[in-house]
Image 1: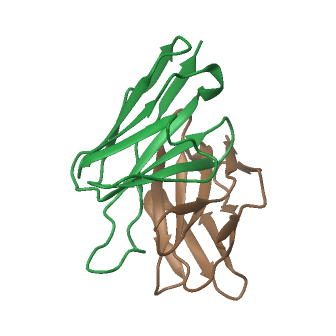
Image 2: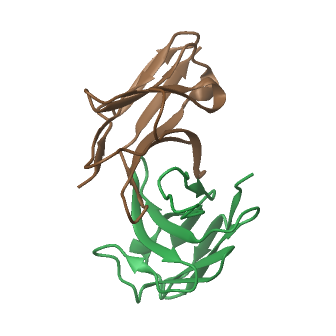
Length: 113
Length: 121
């Protein structure tokens, strides 16, 4: 069965510093991986996806993620964090063939000025 | 593009009331819509998957008679919480996906509504 793990419940970063939010996955077959961000009392916003191709995927708001097949990881990164990046981040894998998303437990990112 | 509108955003009602939540894809046709439930500071729990024109597929443990889902068109799905009780209070989120595109499912992200905060008194 497909699964996703986000090992950190919370990540604290100073504004201007690089940030990493970790995600590992377990799939049978090719992984279809996604990152979403959720602000308080809002739905999820799509950030980026990995389907195939380059291991470094660039997405919205300056975020990128690195797909590492050998480590089964898909960590979210940003070179310089902003206070406005503070939110809840979810990694997800698509469960084939039905198409539903399997979400990690979420990581709360806090960026302090 | 790919905007999903969810309405209402907030509902407060008495125990025993039935509540309908609408999920609309505004600028694309959504062959598949998903309904999630989320508790504070927790991940999303998939409740059901609905495909336009067919019955919804419910996840294990979700009462289909309690949570009625209708996906009558390619742009609208509704979730009705029947005879709601305080334990049904939660944040409900829908998402929509194009589904099969040229025979390939996997590369389409789901697009989410802004959620509905349901509070049952």
